[in-house]
Amino acid sequence: MRRGIEIREAHFPGRAGIDAYGNGGFRFADMSHRGSILCLPSGIHGWDAQEEQPLEKGMFEKVLAEAGDIEFLLVGTGSSIRPLPADLKAALREMNISSDPMSTGAAVRTFNVMLAESRAVAAALIAV
Image (cartoon, rainbow, N blue to C red):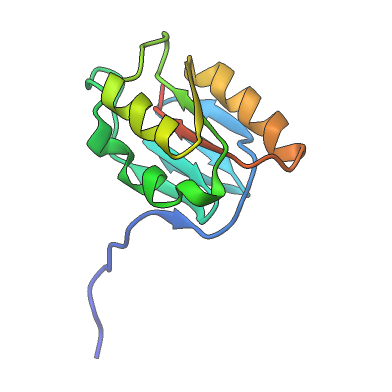
């Protein structure tokens, strides 16, 4: 019996550098994704974050769930730098994660370097 289109949560189950960004998405591992992404130890996940949306701690639940495997969190906040909410910074600090907000382009470049160095890095990247 035929089934219709099955929509699944966007997830690439591996660590991969970001090959390109822009036009509202990212390219990695010979694939592309429209929208924002979380690059975590468990893989690359689609993320419902947009540049004009305020950053909130609840948006980072997947990051906090994998905190034991993360030392650095790079947050690409879009075209310009925005500060992280105080409650998020405090939660990350409690879990011994250093966080650094920066433009998405800078976060992509830094993530790729740290990943190549086998550092325990994660990234939350808002699409531009």
